[in-house]
Image (tube, rainbow over all chains, first blue to last red; front, side):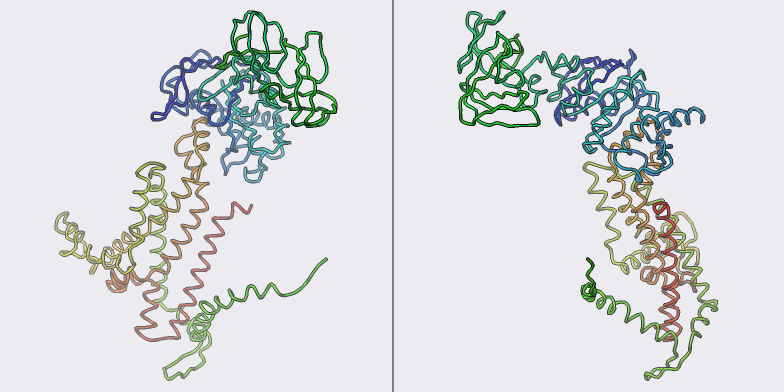
Length: 349
Length: 287
């Protein structure tokens, strides 16, 4: 387990990480999800001991490592760039941390071969990095992280520089590779889709702060703020304005339903596009009528962008639906799938 | 479909013409001189390979060649490691980077004959700052105009002062191009500073280092101006390097035939050693 307590980081007068509390567990992937510059790499470097902290504490397996050197923290790090020792063979690259640790030659061989088998590097063990493809180079870096006995493995956008097919392949393998090794796995990415595919826990990062942390599926279902709600959705989540009065929510463009536990006032409501369909899904559905602006067919799904009152909505539904651009169509939405936020973006209900 | 025509050769012609005028033609005149004897008046007598044989057998040439190899060997032995050490200790970022770079580049900007005169005046006993300091303050008997050892030390120190910067700048360029990620990886592995140098910095500097060694070899093997101005090849013949000897034969004695033969031998040695260096240093990549 890695635990951060009130950890902050600054460079000069610029605050890179605002006070952060986080508990990352073993046994599943911990994904740091955020845009470039949101502080994912800063947070990793802090936990790895590569950059000093301005204040706060880092604990690894209960041990305070705040002032401990990087090499004594027993960690591994895989970068976005393919970092290997240029003049060592793949075998020596994987073995290098084990040699530094003073492991016996026979054990080194066993561990290197095990890691090489997992990553299908066996035929390349005696080649040098520059004779390998990008994917093989990155697999070598991953093998080094696996062979080493680490308490924590940091993967900083390890797939970002690979082509699409390799990325898919390696992403599928990743959870299996680290399963049962007893290390905390921290995976930084800027792609929400990766967080969903890898499962486990996700920490949403924004502007040097963790905005929400929990099981990835929970964050998907119960975002704590409007920014978190917007993260996992393609096409983007629908956000519309409602007025609540007397336990009744009313959309500006018409349509209303009953709500509970909400004071009277103006709110924002968020609904994922696939919950807005051109057909009725339940008796509780609210009907929204709007003029279709853009339609798209992708595979077997059709999406329609429509204007309802002053809000733009997107509907995404399976099947091919005959929308007419410029015509009014009816869409249906079950209020059970709505999430409510105050005007400043905080979750209300 | 295959089209065949010789048009492409026309595009190479300008370069060929240029190379012919600045390299091939002058060299062919040297070849012409090297197999003939002349007493002036544009009268030539066929000599065959006689001059080559005479040069290669002469003690004078062998001695100069030996001195030349010793000189080049010594300056490479000093300048390459020193250049690497200086490059490693230079700051990678911040205010001092441009300051260091400019300071490093200064010696290379000074004209070669000025370097020679500077060091001549600087090291003269009694008059020069260094000569005075060594003799009269430290009590070391030093006189590069009289003692071969003093002269050698001065010539070598001068060359190190003048040209180590080149190695430094090339190595520095190689060093700053190494991404931080490599150093971080080494830190995580717990690699020692020596391992970082041996397994990251040195391999990453290899290309620039090959260039540095080749340039320093060729320049030092063909060196003329600085030692000529500093010692004039003396005392005696103790610092008469190949090029100084060549000029003595060609211009001092006006023996054009032997001088031409010597030039060609000189050129062949430079080419051969450069090729050996290059092959050895790039052998790994070809494997």
